Length: 98
Image (cartoon, rainbow, N blue to C red):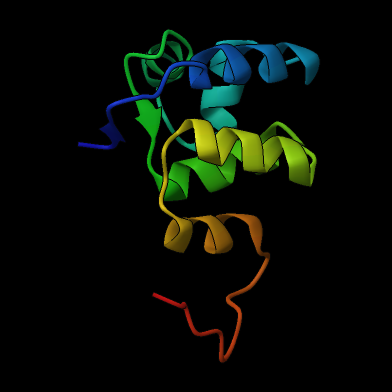
C-alpha cells in the first residue's frame, strides 16, 4: 500500500501548491509516478504520501525549504524521515540523538 493515513491540512497544501505550479492532477501524477486517483486522494486528505513519493512531490511542486518542512510536518513524518526528504544527498556521519 503506497499511502499512510493523512494529517489534516496536508491535502489542502498539496492542492494549493499544485495549482500554483500550474499543474493539473494528471500532470502532477505523471511527474511523481503515481496515478491521478492517488493525487486526488492526497488532496482530499484521505491519504498522505510516503517518503519516496513525498520527496518527488516536493521536487515536482518546486517547494521552498520552509514549504517542504510544513508539508513534511503536516504528513506527520518522524524526524528521522525529515532529513532524507529535504536533503539532496544522505548526510554522511550524521548521528541522530535520542
